[in-house]
Amino acid sequence: MKKILLTAFVLPLLVALGWWYFHERQLVDYGPTYREYAYVTNSKDNSVSVIDLRTFQRAATIRVGSGPTGIAANSKKNEIYVVNSASNNVSIINAESNKVVAAIGVHGRPYFIDVSADGKRAYVANSASDNVSVIDLEKRVVLGNVRVGDGPGLARVSPDGTTVVVSNRGDNTVSLIDAANLRVRSTIAACQRPEDIAILPDNSKAFVSCSGSAQVASIDLRSGKLLALLDVGKTPINLALKPDGGELIVCNFDSDNISIIETSTNEVGGSYLIGKHPTRGIVSSDNSRLYVSNFGSNSVAVYDIDMGKVIATMPVGSGPDGLALSQSQQYLLALDSQSGDVTVIQTRNPRTLEPTEYSLLTMIPVGVQPNNVVVKAFMLPKAAH
Image (tube, rainbow, N blue to C red; front, side, top):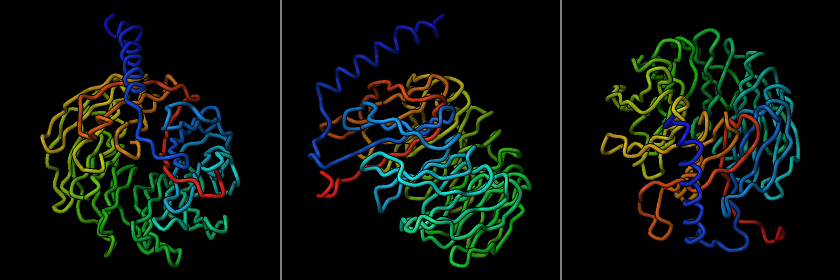
């Protein structure tokens, strides 16, 4: 009964109060050429919802391919890339016009996409064709398809752009691709059902979560060797790396906790209860806060990394999954996959930008089963306004 009352009365009231507070204390005015959008993939209605983060209103709904899942932004140009798993292609969205400007065919059942730091290439793991498509983003063509292991789920490129790490869920291996030569330089027997990948900022190591064996694999990217298998909780499905690279947070879906790994020593520093079925984590840019979506308890936990404890638990919509922070880190977006909306949580005081008591700002309807989100902030070119 308490849960019903929270959903039917308390949560909408809190949202309404937060929305009133937002209107009383407006966002910083960056000028007429500033744009900041959140792009949300809606996997069950073949669309991307665009939320204007200056007004927290839905600005557009963009039709893409079938079954959109992965999404990424280009840091060097105003483009967004959407992986369509059912139509085996990538939609390119112009962020200035919020329109699809091209579609690039890849291979079977892609789910995620990663873009190199220089903005020139994208990498897509094709789970049904056991290869990785390498896309030239300037020419909008596929440069090549690199054969990897069985059932690759994710391909992530190192910050320096030299190595692509691929988790092969079907044969429990990890492939390391030489990005310059487009060939596999090492195949590593890792652990059961490798999934998510995190690469250190100095390009020295990759960490891979293995959901089938409750472990995280640490891999030396220079030698291409397995360094350690670290025991964590049950069904580790997501890795959140602190921006400074010092610690890695693991979301253990079936243990209802997180594990924290010291990346320099390959040691698990501790595990902490966080909520029911933690799904995604994201760390603030100042390395101080971890936000975790708890799929099974319809909440987002706020974890103070220095204090080592949960300092707030915020109610959100049904089945929270993907997370993103606004450019200012002032607002957290939580995708509610079952209720089809986005909960916006205020994380900082708009005037002082100091940490404050967390509050619900608003809930924005999007599409059916939203699952991934990316934020893009930019200034419009002079000719565009």
